[in-house]
Amino acid sequence: MEKELVEYLNGQRNSVSACVHMSRENLNNSEKIYIGLPDAKNTLYAFYNSKTQHVRCEKIQDASGFAFMPVPSTGTGGKEAYVMLMLTEFEKLPNMSLEAKGMIMSLINCLEWNTGRIIRQRDKLSITKEMLIGMLKIKPWTVRKALKELSGFKILRYDRKQKAYFMSHKFIKKGEERK
Image (cartoon, rainbow, N blue to C red; front, side, top):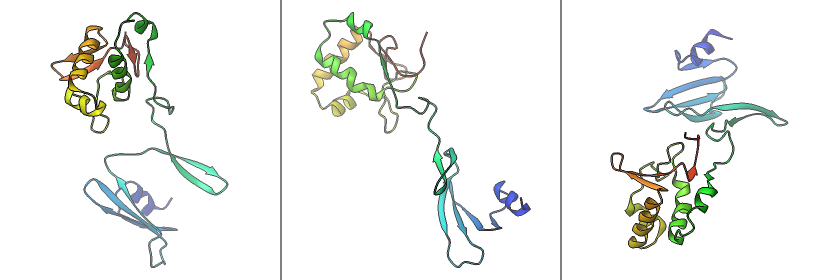
């Protein structure tokens, strides 16, 4: 490999000419990379590369050539996200109201991986009663009644220190098994 190309890949140089011409423009949290032919007037490719968020890719070859595909996340092994419901624990609670059951099913998408904390997916903030009212589009007293019922069955608990609701791993699990 040519010395200039090695220096470019190590970040010591911002421009290199080999078979192609590559250059880098440093920005705050990213860099803009230009790729072109040394004798050409126009750039072939220009794209942004984040300095803070690195996306791992693997090189795959097919009939049309090479392609770079993102590597799936390791949280679920590349499979769809899942949640385990402990049915035997729920069968011990035959008199649970429909509102409480519906709230459990509505909150499954909001569970944080491995902790059971109930969060808003968009910004990872802990969900409050007011957020639940807006998210579920039901009356405030219905939310309070369902939360009280779920707390009474110890399915849901509120941690005053963290100011967050947590789902019990005894009933619903998302991620590693707690002992």
